[in-house]
Image 1 (cartoon, rainbow, N blue to C red):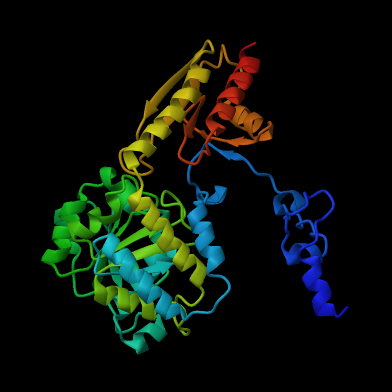
Image 2: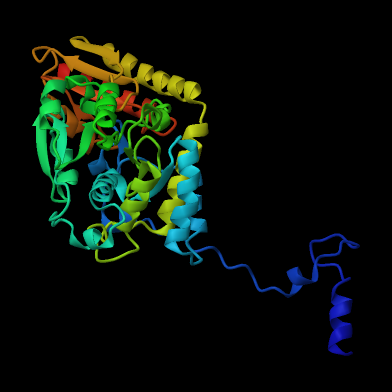
Length: 407
């Protein structure tokens, strides 16, 4: 029998264990036994890296946030083909700008990078000779006005470009500080309530003197309206973290604002070299992942999400306040990290443990849990980084450790 005839005969023969008359695909008869899939590597276990339940918040040192599965899929699905970085930035920037009511936008290497590149764009414009000189400011404006209450560590991103910070407190002081060397006015959003000049007045003063205004809203993506609020308000540049409330890549951020300033900022950034931002690379996967994360964030049912956060907080609060000597309060921060926040405090004479000891016990327990220390003998807990069901684990561990300390 010829080989072709033999194969044709096999295709209609019954197989042991299969009723006569049932025909199996030829491929199933000829294929070799399936090879079991190779188990995925668990690099955390392999390298001995502790993982934990994050009941603290979207802190950079705790790796920010967990990306949505759609974001991970976007990163994975775009990792197998080449694309020109400028084209990716162009197309993604257009989409982000439209969603956030900005003229233009670009994905940066975190909010810090957005601050540096945005400031650089203000200083150099599209003059490539100036771009090549930073942080040497010869022939450029060199001063940035900042309110005293806003003059905190993050301003160092702005001074990376070589500028000098001019600190003021009142609008009258600002009027006196403005001169031919004034390049920009910088506003730190979470410090807004502590300053004497509110954001709307800050923008108005900038427009009065034709000075660009920049706002650092880093982790302040909630409420979602913040994503376009400051563009609508009239800030020339808006800087935001990507890997916190938006749940994009931790190493990504967004710079958005006026079209000419975004174009100038991109001249100071990768993929171009010979500039101050060359080291602030964002790969195509992160750019596209940031786009997907923002799209999902803006289209979430935020009322439903808020209720989920509140319900999680209620479960953890209920477990803690059953312990004698423990008191709880739930609040929402006025500006930054606006989510339901639980503070748990205790009488040290009745619950004999310091906040540092309590944090360490949660950290070393099973599962490992991170919370933030509060004032005196208290801890602070948020729920927006918790995965479904983890609030019950946290509640159980709170009850256990408070019980031990008060027994």
